[in-house]
Image (cartoon, rainbow, N blue to C red; front, side):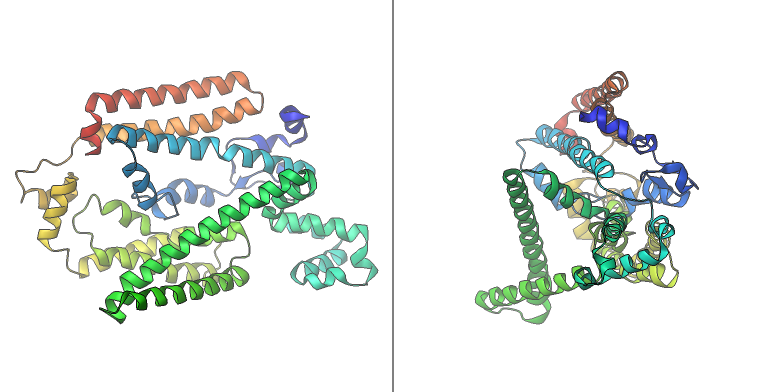
Amino acid sequence: GGMAGLKAKLAPQILDFFPKIGKVSVSGITGGALALGVGAFVAHIGLQWWATWYPGADPGGGGYIAQRMMSAKNEKHSLFATLWFTIAHYTIRPWPWIVVALAALVLLPREQNPQIIEKQNPALFAKVEAAYHNHALLQSKDPVYQSSEFKQMYETYENTVDPGIMYPKLMLRYLPPGLLGLLIAVFLAAYMSTIASQLNWGTSYLINDFYRRFVKQNAPERHYVLISRWSIILMTVFSLFVTKYFLTTISGAWEFIINASAGMGAVLILRWWWWRINAWSEISAMIAPLIIYPIARYWMGLHSPITLYPTVLGTTIVWLTVTYLTKPEPVEHLKAFYRKTHPGGLGWRYIENMLPDVKGDRGFGHMFLDWILGIVLVYSFLFGLGDILFTEYLRGTIILLIGILAGWFIYVDLNKRGFETIAR
């Protein structure tokens, strides 16, 4: 029992904190251990973190992070609140999910891929696959569909092609009624909160940024309220249609978000470093991946995350071309922005030369070092906590100490340079 018992029942490769890279035979990674091709590994490590947009982790900063920072007491609090959120969100919060996922691998049947299941009994597999896509067959009077062999293979197939289904299965089978009801209520509350936020957010864009500006101007507020209500209904119907027919799994939804924003990240970052970025740069970077990703996926036959390569490259070419073909923002706007944010750096030298009375930010070397130390801090806490959970106490303690040391260096550097200067 406990974590020691869970660890003993898992294949050793599953607890490797780094994926197997390159060609790995299925027999060599039994139990669903993680294996990545070289291309997939490079896509995740070299592209995804900076090139794609995803809610709450905008590569160039965003509304989620800005709201947290602006709600803090002062600059010092905002910096450390953001750092604490990063630690809590990426190193503490995932471990309950990871432990449940590992328990699912032990408690529920699953194979590395459907081909392994098919080899066991091709005829029965055909019926299992048909029933998975047509649930009415599960109620068939055919004795094959009611046999224990079919039910066992069906569950194995279902868990293999849609691992996300294993979480609710564990809930239903192992939680007592009280905790099960509480967890369902929590899921519903989180779901409704997210839906309400996204629908209101999306409607505000449609009404304030599009309808009010380009369709009907100077109308009574009652008119815009009415249109916003209809917009929410239409967006809800459209969302249900998309989730029903296109995004049938949670992982599929995240893959779509990541690929449909691939290439945007560079614009979101560079808008703080290069004066030439304009609104058309961002608009083209938003539209391009929606066209390039389907081409990469369905015409070129690529799968995520390999689709990131052509999508990021194509989107980058598009937004750079659009940037140079369109006019920059008015100089007075750029000057006002520079006076307020004084970003500094080579990319703003053109505007900086027009404002000799404004001192641009410096200390980019310190910022880069703090960034590297922040990465060390987060990964040290993630791996260190994992080692301690799985009774590797000495190694886990050493890794955590490395993370604490990295955090201490960050604090010393920020304190030395002055928090007000850094976050002003």
